[in-house]
Length: 116
Ligand code: HEC
Ligand code: HEC
Ligand code: HEC
Ligand code: HEC
Image 1 (cartoon, rainbow, N blue to C red):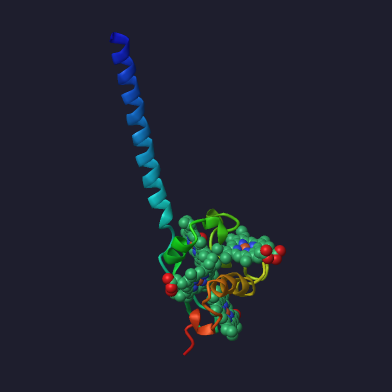
Image 2: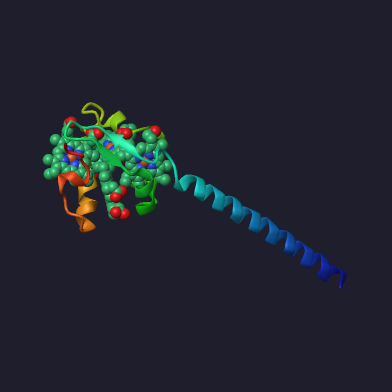
């Protein structure tokens, strides 16, 4: 009977530890899920783009899908400046528009560019 009690208490301890670990990882996921600026204003000459960053994080939870070199490598335009990597717009057009097209949103310029 005594050993049963100890076993039971040990099991309870494990359950508590597991519960705490799950809670902590849940918090970590919530913290990661809403990262970086909520909206990024891109300013190409064609017309500003209010890129809904957090909304896109909900559509695509994998940060690496866009931040393909890692989030810690900084903004896309840091590399995609025509020197380190091709200019952002050359890549961005295919990259951004392909998905919009796939989702049946079409490719109208005004979907992204605020053309005055
Ligand atoms: C649909 C593409 C996309 C997804 C998915 C995405 N981002 Fe971004 N993110 C961008 C773009 C575009 C910018 C603006 C880059 C620029 O200004 O050149 C940006 C900017 C940022 C910035 C500020 C600039 C910098 O790099 O310091 C941070 C931080 C960031 N993102 C973190 C994240 C994290 C964390 C996730 C995942 C939870 C994520 N992003 C998911 C496209 C994306
Ligand atoms: C640390 C530098 C760096 C950062 C930051 C970076 N890129 Fe890149 N990216 C590159 C390089 C280098 C290539 C390869 C160029 C090539 O071979 O055409 C590339 C290629 C690409 C391609 C083309 C992939 C293909 O298969 O043709 C896309 C799309 C792209 N980047 C989008 C982004 C977006 C969106 C961001 C920001 C969320 C970003 N990149 C941030 C360096 C970077
Ligand atoms: C993998 C799919 C995917 C990629 C990649 C993607 N988008 Fe989107 N985007 C969407 C979807 C889906 C919506 C519609 C969201 C809604 O209406 O709820 C959207 C909506 C938008 C809107 C309209 C504002 C809004 O939030 O409704 C803008 C502007 C936009 N995207 C810009 C961009 C830019 C710029 C890029 C590239 C850096 C990009 N998107 C990459 C799927 C994507
Ligand atoms: C899905 C989003 C999206 C759509 C739709 C879109 N663009 Fe863009 N465009 C971008 C992004 C992102 C950039 C790069 C922004 C940056 O460099 O900061 C860009 C950049 C540009 C540039 C470069 C301007 C400069 O200052 O260098 C031109 C020109 C352009 N787009 C024309 C168009 C035309 C014309 C259409 C319609 C046929 C169109 N775009 C539709 C997202 C889009």
